[in-house]
Image 1 (cartoon, helix red, strand yellow):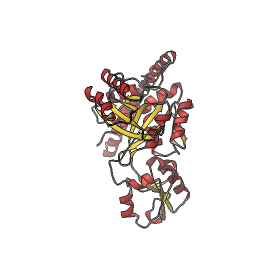
Image 2 (tube, helix red, strand yellow):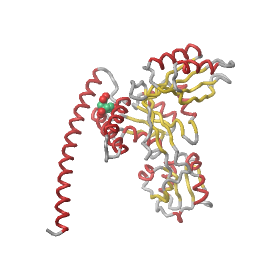
Image 3 (cartoon, protein in one colour):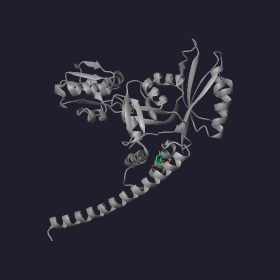
Image 4 (cartoon, helix red, strand yellow):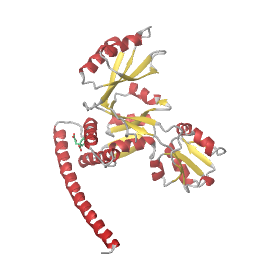
Length: 367
Ligand SMILES: O=C(O)C(=O)C[C@]1(C(=O)O)C=C[C@@H](O)C=C1
């Protein structure tokens, strides 16, 4: 047998093995889908929500812990998210509103979390995401809450004062910016469009590589990509998703100055999820304007040894100099010590709202 023929025979044999495995995977996927349909029917009868972020976290954690490789955990997460997304859509696709337009980082975060079987509705403001979710026109809303370099999105925090919506889950997304244009040729770029936050995150790269090119402001990175798709001399700083949607080429990938650039998004809904394997709880409260008030309010957390992971304050907008505090802590409200601390805090402050207890997203594993 010639060497070539030998190679062909072993290729054929291995591909035959893969075909057999694919058939088994297919059969198992359908077996799993039928069970998911049974679960959906039970949930329907008992008025439970189909989507269970806490169960999804448990599944992803279990699968990635079981994995012995060589298949990478990041890919497993994407695949299992898609499987669960498809299971949900067998009942009825979830409707998810997000801060648009199509191709924004919020769009990317929403797709990362809900998979490609959900129905996505871009809206043009953070308030509109809250409105759509509150009215029930969508099941869930996705909004940005903070960026590791730029800080908190105070507008989103303010919305929680006005709406009675809850946090169902969080999404931690590593934000990477790209310079995109129709041709992908750097010499053709005469102007660059982007959202000021994205421009700020790429300042050093832009100064070093595009020193005399004017930078123009757009309402979002996705809008910048849309402009670049209609103007041969324009480039946009935007996401990989925007490149795909607006059919743009990469002039340069990863132009952000700080590679550790994360944005956290929240999934809002009208109900609370149950406990998962690792949760956090968010509350907001206001205190009397007197010395030591905040110190007193934080004492119950110290007593119960609850780790606070974030504290933010915002003017209440109701009375001058009255402040609202937003606090994130480790644990779920169903945990005895979390419930007790929150109840104790509630007694001391003027007003307290439990925004949600939801699964922690640790983001994609660092390689
Ligand atoms: O376990 C459930 O509650 C299911 O509905 C099944 C399932 C899955 O496919 O595993 C589907 C969607 C939920 O968001 C979580 C899990």
